[in-house]
Image 1 (tube, rainbow, N blue to C red):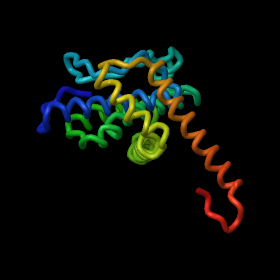
Image 2 (image 1 turned 180 degrees about the vertical axis):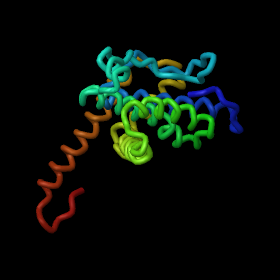
Image 3 (image 1 turned 90 degrees about the horizontal axis):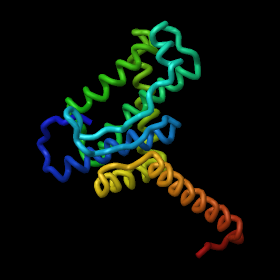
Image 4 (image 1 turned 120 degrees about the vertical axis):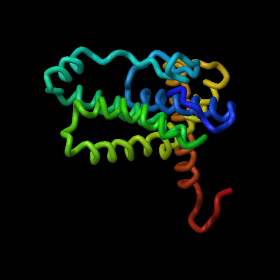
Length: 196
């Protein structure tokens, strides 16, 4: 996330950065995109970032040659989703500024230009944006994980991929347990009787 001037207080700004980076990290984990850590420790041009693993050589070769096979295409498309996830997660705290939107969108477009035909770009990005929003805001496991990871970032400043994985898997376990209990009680309640 960029270091743009904001018209909000420092605590809200830091919380927005934490949600932004948590969105990137949780999306990366959900899609199997390897990363080392997410941080809200500022650097020269960034208020925070996720340190992703480098692109595999086959992706870089495909970008240079203009031919990307299906597996690599999926990897690059997932990279776009991870890029879009930051601003979507940040919306829980505050709307991203135009500069912030342009920063992540610029990165996403640079990636997308290698994948999509120029005339298909707008439709492809609209679809990818909806897909990312569904993952980050509408999936209970991932939306809860984003909130929790953001709080961890505010406390620790940096979280590892292993910590993100543990958090997501714990929320997934809780969701599965709740669904199992719901099914159990739905079966155990005699017809016409309300369960307690």
